[in-house]
Image: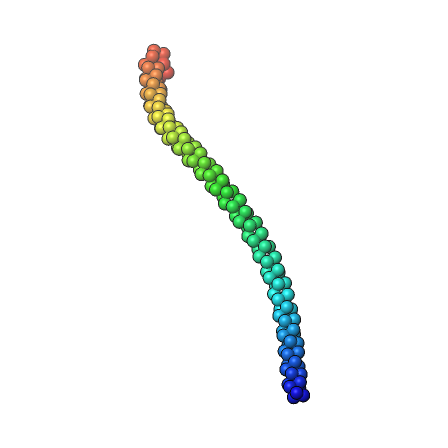
Length: 134
């Protein structure tokens, strides 16, 4: 019976040792779990910050895209207005060029007529009685 008690005591000792080992492992696992929970919280905060930053960047990108679209529309309308002005001024320039050519032709014609009139007047003046003979 003593041997049974010794055997039982040895078994109880092993159980106590095994229980302590399990408690040590449990404590270690709880510590690891606590560290992992802290890491998870830290990662969650980082994720929230990144999502917030992403949201801000996305908002700015959207604002910039709408500004670019607005500026492109404005530039397009200005370009159309400038092209219209260009066509108007081209037409006006062509009209003025044509008027200048007509005016220059008129001036040439008038000079010819003036020169002929002078010659005619000079020839009439020369034939008048009492005109100075050269």
